[in-house]
Length: 461
Ligand SMILES: *[C@@H]1O[C@H](CO)[C@@H](O)[C@H](O)[C@H]1NC(C)=O
Ligand SMILES: *[C@@H]1O[C@H](CO)[C@@H](O)[C@H](O)[C@H]1NC(C)=O
Ligand SMILES: *[C@@H]1O[C@H](CO)[C@@H](O)[C@H](O)[C@H]1NC(C)=O
Image 1 (spheres, rainbow, N blue to C red):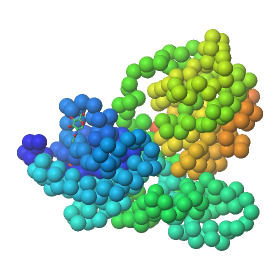
Image 2 (image 1 turned 180 degrees about the horizontal axis):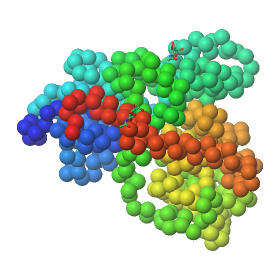
Image 3 (image 1 turned 90 degrees about the vertical axis):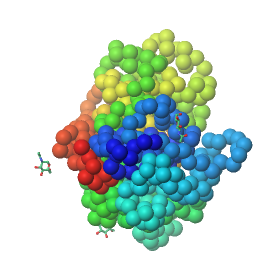
Image 4 (image 1 turned 135 degrees about the horizontal axis):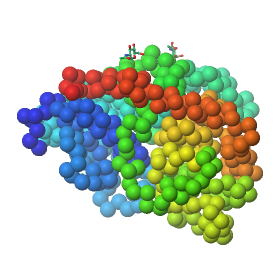
């Protein structure tokens, strides 16, 4: 790597090499790299993620990718059990990143001047101290789930007083600074419910302890979405920066992938606001009886739908469903859909989703109300926000899909009598705020400028 002459600074970036974490972090690095062309960014991730992030070597200008070991033993089969993979990785991560930085400094011929990391990699705060450089952390989800992690000790204290009352999961209370209400059962597992000592819960708790040491913390959101949470987190963190929605500011590579199943052309002749788009992300799959309930509800209510469902799950659909709905034009089932383009299409009237943060934010940015069926992690608290705080979704009664519950939820969002008016208006208002945030001098625009200053100092163009 012959970069010494032209490059003035070297920023190291550590990815958490699972799920959608690396591509999200990389999308921010790309923005920074184009704002600061004289800075070189070394991007550390595992070989497996490197291959999908950097399919061709010549693409990246001042971003250089480095592989670190994923911690999997030689000959380890069946990678993909997320829990196990994460633990194996975490066992070697600190040493691996440290060794990687030394190698990259030699290779590039320059010491690093900033360390930018996925917030889960809490131990890297010490490395930044050792190297005497700013430590900048990225939280890949919303302000709500960051708050619950950050205030874990406080939440556990307050919760101790109400614990034991019946139906405690359904209790709605004010446990989190900046959030007036939350249903206790929707707080992430590992904070007050579930295994509080699991490797994941421990990692999140340690992260909470070091985050105030960060020079900046940035998230994929816009501050107008969560003014009170933002205010509170800004009082405890240095430079708490909402710089999203990302899908409005950087065209994601995967989204520009061709629409290979012709979703967009299928939507063209549908009535505006009439189609349900259904997708549960890349990891979550509802159990077969819920897939059946959704299918029956769609046929019962004659709701037009575009359903992104992996091939091997399609076999669980009711017999004849695929054929019937294809022939009568009611719906289309595809193994993959270009989600952002689909959501932006005016035919879409509701997004049936697992409530993953990216999906939630993409839906808001496109002005599409939701029906959330959360599974785990931050999905339940995201769904709480969507339904009860922002009021832009219908609830799935009982927390899982039944035919009747799904019919009601679809009706309440898609109905053309006045009953869905409030949801639609609130969704539209948030969409407008999201778009304003990323315009020149909008809040996310200004926050990104601050991030550039923190990460590259005076080296931006
Ligand atoms: C990452 O992947 C690219 C493309 O597959 C490859 O050229 C590059 O050498 C890889 N990086 C490392 C450090 O292996
Ligand atoms: C945020 O919440 C914490 C904990 O309750 C509190 O100490 C702090 O004063 C709050 N900050 C603001 C600005 O409300
Ligand atoms: C940008 O926004 C800030 C804060 O709202 C305001 O003080 C400033 O005058 C604005 N600048 C321009 C050029 O509009």
